[in-house]
Length: 171
Image 1 (cartoon, rainbow, N blue to C red):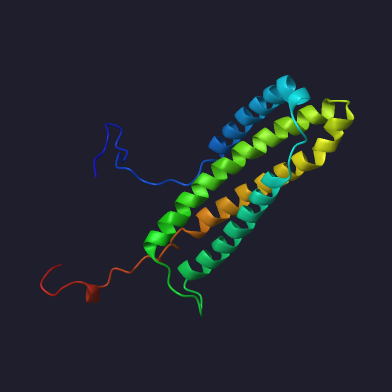
Image 2: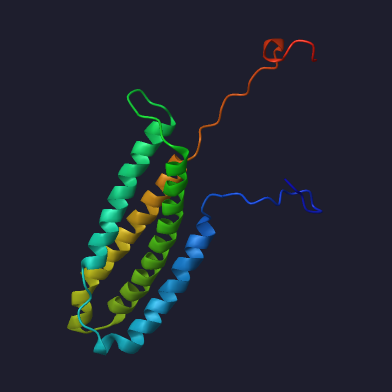
């Protein structure tokens, strides 16, 4: 482990997902969604429901995985132990899913904002699918953050400094 001049660690480490990164990604994609729709809406077909279903299924799957992983890491009765490599994969999935969810939520929010201001019947017909996409994306973000949190190893209570743990002859 090395340290920089300020005394902070410089070795690579995995940090929890930053909420600010998710917010910035969401705001940027909202702006892109608004701009794309404002220039291309008249040439687009009706917005599909498929992304809503895909995001909702992913959110449910990650929620169930978070619940299962949490029980396994906390070693609750009846829960099988979890392999460390699987936990690393779950964290990678959670980090990626939260970012994808933030981008999709922002994009959907941009679309929804534009559609709500558009006075046409076609825009009103696209509002439910867009709102559903926003809700499903927010659910995916929540499930992904829960999965990431579930993968944390619980803190161990501090061990007392007693002489029984030390080898004899060394003090």
